[in-house]
Image (cartoon, rainbow, N blue to C red; front, side, top):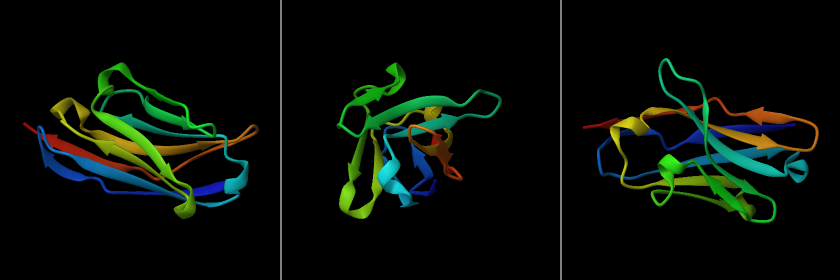
Length: 115
């Protein structure tokens, strides 16, 4: 499996930007898809964005046009650029890696957007 470490969370005002990073180590050669998920207090974890090995991306409707998922293969890192942040984007953001037989989660990073 892989180990995932997220960073880049913090407190930002509405309309601001943050970039989250997810550094992967371990069996990275077996990763097919990478994704960002989030979980707000009292809510279920939800998908934010995914990026597959072929470069195809998917986004939740609520973040389309504002968030961008990307990767740097040389650094084994996936990013989530978040622009035009809204208070409803406040959540713990988790990175996830999927192979054909397992998946791994990072520990999460808190994003708080103030109004």
